[in-house]
Image (tube, rainbow, N blue to C red; front, side):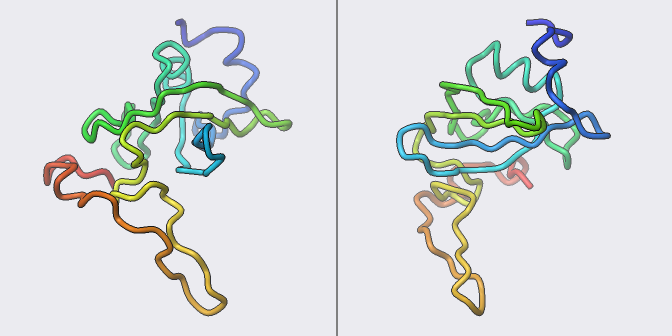
Length: 136
């Protein structure tokens, strides 16, 4: 799929050429993670049917699950009313979306005074990633 496709022009990219993306588990409605995409990442996501993000820290495309195996199969892509946020409804391979080994990146819950861990580690990150491949 060409990165200059008409549908990509509808997205309101920020000043860095990025759009925020929310990954939502289709079956449960759980919000699993937040990331960024550039035009190429969004085009590749549509082409592959799997989430491809833009890593701001590594300055490169990041095919979710390329190291961990925790691929996100994209069932549906939606654009919000302001056309500046993308929602992916996904199936999460392995049930783990977070690089910490948890189901969701949103595992910390505010208890009124501090942030508490509200979700368990499902798999030790050291067994998911090699030392030089850990996402930041």
